[in-house]
Length: 339
Length: 250
Image (cartoon, rainbow over all chains, first blue to last red; front, side):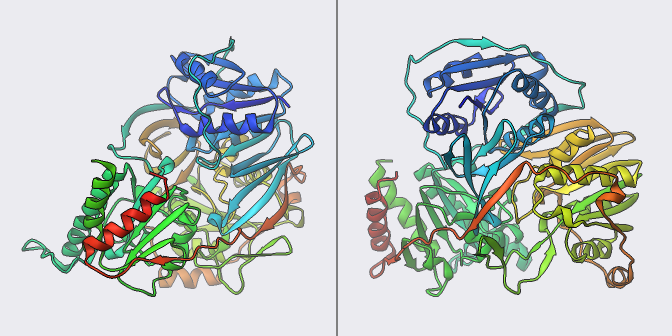
């Protein structure tokens, strides 16, 4: 089966899940072409070969400098309609989702979104995708041509890059439609590891605000003092995260109480994550939070309440005050990791 | 200015979902307006003008919530032919409904529905309509026939300009949705909610392009928790650090 993999990137930097998608495509068998669209992105074509692509289709055009989904969809739909394509894969990112969706409308086919497993049944891909934030799984197939699937990050193994592996780059003619919208600019998120592709996540909940040894500065209202205390708790969490090269997560309760921005929320109405290690601090484990992190490989829970439901999901549990355990764990991990 | 908000009815986020005979079940958990859609209603009401809520399927609970929040009208799109419809079909039906409302400047969605979690219906509806898709909007500024939004993407915020009409989807950063007022709830309970079927929309049943072959419970994971106890915080931390290192994931 002829497969194309769309390489998603932000300003020329590829999203790791793009390479995972090449690996997933190779595992299904057949010829894998990486599709690289943008302006000044030839380096991504070379990287795609190193991650296992057999061919690269490179479409460069100044109109693709910024990602606007309408332009990209028009360009990609035109390229797909020129070939006899069996399968079109995308990484599930905000860009990948929408681009896949629009191309499906253009080509009158369907999309299977945020898939975590694929198997072949003849020429059909039977895809498994989480629904209800992973409380259930759905098996689904696409009956249109090509089959379009977006793959969840970290659900498929990233291939080892093979330096020097190369191949033929085909330059694609790019058609863009009428411009419907323009990008004015960006305010990039400040530093730190992103939750989306983090291998390790250290999270905090309501318990971050309960440090008995802290006295808030004078003049704060009760609510301000609570937020201030919680922020000191998240400083501890941030320090541990830094040691582990981890992203910082939070429960909805912590976000709703304004302890930390929404971008950090893990759960049914936040981000659904599946890191190798998830350390939950002062998080009780409401069903909505569990839905967002249940697929973490190893879960560590630190909570004062021995009956907290989070312990039912954890591999390792500590009943204790996170304000004592987290700094101590940070020191212990620093020593072990030689930091 | 006419605005449409597309909303959906879903089981409450606290519902325990169980797959039975290949179907999702949620016991006696209540059906509610999709939580993301509340941000869409809030944004639509803040932009102002005539706001019409449209829901495909459901028993009008979500529509009544939207009316109680302050939407002027609501419409239920309902047809037996829409059982098991996929996102592509949903986009085509919603686009037809938006066109039937007529003269619409903006259509708002929540960023995704918490049941199917696909999050592509806003972009697909925009594509069917031929409108720009300004998804994941955290803030909105309308200036005449132009709109500027700040989009919350993985890498931070992206600022995008477009000419109206446009489709938007809203994220939580937009700001807390209002609670329905007492007067609003009373008005909603008395409201006549028109129902449109496919014949009324003047479209054929969309061809299903995606087939849902099964719904399963996730594999139960046999985790037996090992509690690390005894000793000072430093001793507990050391024991925990040893366990974490032994997992060989760092």
